[in-house]
Image 1 (tube, rainbow, N blue to C red):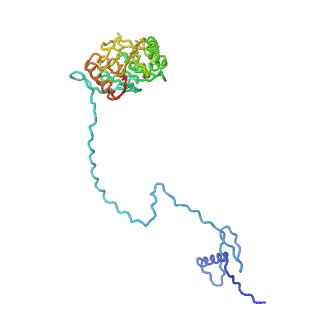
Image 2 (image 1 turned 60 degrees about the vertical axis):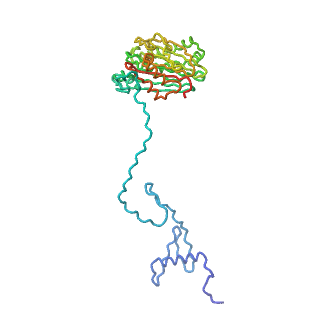
Image 3 (image 1 turned 90 degrees about the horizontal axis):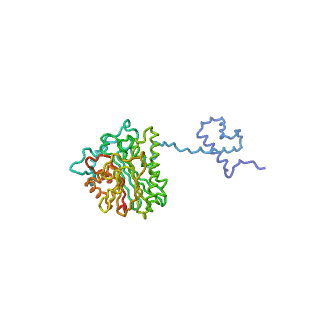
Amino acid sequence: MPEPTAYEPEEADGLDATFRQNEAILRESGPAVPAGEAAAPSVPAQGSPWRPVHPGEVPPAPAYAPAPAYAPPRQDPAGPLPEEAGPPRPPAPEPGPPAASAPTPEPEAGPALPELGEPWHGGPKPPLYRPVPQAAPAVPSAGIEGALVPDIVVDGAEHGALTVRAASVRGDSHRYQAEPRQDSVCVARIGSGDSELLVLGVADGVGSAPLSHVGSQKACALAAGALDRVAGPLAAAVAESDLPGFTALARQATAEVATLLRHEAERYGRRPSEFATTLRLLVVPLDPEVRVRGLLTLGDGGTALLREGRWDTALGATEEGDGAVIDTRTPALPTTREPVATLISTRPGDVLVVCTDGLSTPLAGDQDTARFLARAWSPERVPGPADFLWQLQYRVKSYDDDRSAVVLWEGPAR
């Protein structure tokens, strides 16, 4: 029988190679083992049960231990942004003294801004008071409603060939005495479809009535609501030139306004006469085929027609104080509820003016005012709202009342 020879494997398998690598690592990194002493057994990987290794026995492969999960470095949202990879940058130089700033160039001069300036005036000298808002009404004397009435109101509208401008300005006397503006204006669209109408109105609170500024505002609002409720038959009456039908509807509306104003006086605990106000309304169909307009008046004020450069200031005039005649006994809501109704036929190029006596009186009685407004409100060029306000304030001595007007241009606006 041949003698046994040492086992020499032709090629180490994977387990042997792993074992030898682990042994070499332990010899290099661990402490030297003295001669004659057996090396301590290696600690198995976590999770593998330990047992002694006998000579000639192949140790088991260490258990697989996954690498720890990668956690990116924490980023501070308030910190600097990461820089691009590359060679290290040299340190930033020390900051030196700030460089002298270059002088800011002067802006180039543009065209001069247009300025209307103060409103024009008739006669050799202007009125004594400046044409600007002055002392504001005080709550203790005028009440909260009076204190909050604006000194100036501007409005307007455009529907097809119809253009409207409206404004109300506190008079010089009320400005000087810190009293509220007693006039009010109304520009409202009522009805629907073929029955749509514009309601253009002014109301002038009676000067001797302590709450007439409240009465004029509420009369405009209540009248627009009352006419809206009868917009269908109202539009038909105007389109058909039915004066009796229009008059009946106008009386129905003003009666409703008078009743509601009386209820308002009761709510305030005041007499109805303290809310006394005039009312003047122009009813304009939006149907371009209809050239008839309805006029409803109760109390003083004026309605004027500018046609071919000439004024007709007696349009719809009554014995109640239209035109240049001042009547201090004017009928007024809510004690009077019977209006005067009129139908007016217009044509393209006409200009209709509905106004309080603060304008109707100088327009009818002062030639300078009539000439100026005939030029300013000609049909060739409708003014913008700001220009209209400036034109309305054309000044004449001794005419210091509130001034309000709603103007309708019949025809193209441009």
